[in-house]
Image (cartoon, rainbow, N blue to C red; front, top):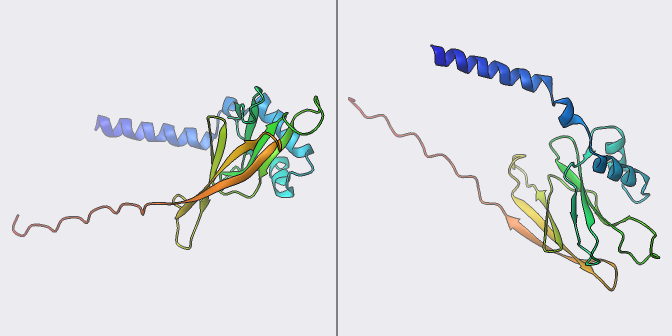
Length: 188
């Protein structure tokens, strides 16, 4: 009986925490989030859909901006993701850099953007950035797209831009089915 009482109390506490929403600390935006949101909103090449998402408060710049040298200029570049704020997850990825064909000191700008993603993820390894996006077919559940499309970006130092991304389709394994329950034993 005590275990049931503790379980009920724990469940009630969990439901109360969920109903209360995120803690004020978790809801606060970081300086990096505010900085990159402002850059995206002022950039004329940021899509209207992304600007609307950021302005209306439905979407947000991810807290975990990744800083790595992707352009091999010995300065960190920034990989910035925009979340939908809902089930669509990450809907846009941007790379900001100061390594451009513009004159020295012209500042930070977007050197790569993709703004029509669904449930995307990013990875940076050894100066290469890649992202995966969900590809659904009829009948797929939100959690489990049939395919993922992975795009890998490499910086072209001469062109001062990411050139010819490589893409590959990753087929997802069908979800394992639970074994059927055994038949009841007669007479037992």
